Image 1 (tube, rainbow, N blue to C red):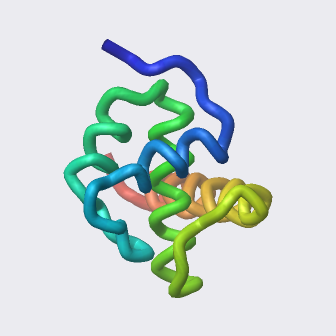
Image 2: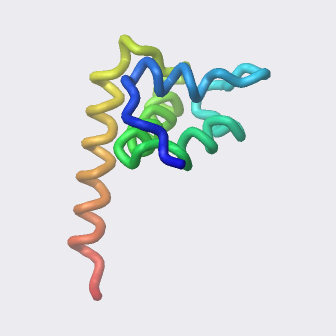
Length: 88
């Protein structure tokens, strides 16, 4: 069952709502479950939040939403460039 679209704050709250605190950049079983069950756009945003966390060294918060969305755009651009340069 897919989750409905969440706000960025709701998405991060859900991913962080583990019995044991999630470290920055960490995929916990709960974060993975959120990713699998989320709307595709929310799942992509969660991927970007994890990537942002790895670069920043801290967990993403609602105030970081614009930077996380910029990270998602950069990830999409890098993927498109790779696909454009891959034969076949």
